[in-house]
Image (cartoon, rainbow, N blue to C red; front, side, top):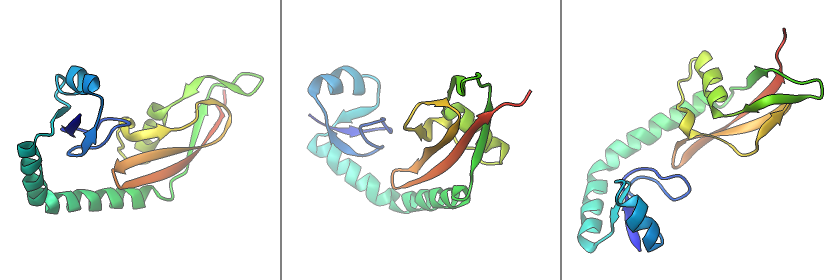
Length: 149
């Protein structure tokens, strides 16, 4: 079943993408929650016209995302957390802590666009991916260190 996404859906696509999904997923979840509409021929024509009109706006959004990516390019974070005697941390470090550290540096990044591939459960060096736009993302290295008393 072909659908047009009305908003970004993780692991599926971005707003205004035409994607193919199983009919149960589309009819029971995406369409009722307002995340998508059925991709009928008339809906596709309306989407094409809307994209044509919004091309200039989308280009500006992409340029803004590239500017933010440029400012984040040389950022390296150090996250202090409580550590046990064996070197493993209590809990884990996630996108919330990364967003807080970026905010301390003056970069207001929504935590929902920060992706950490591996679970951070030990002291060490890791990388987080910030997806600013569907074509623009930046990798931020961060180090998890022991919190000093």
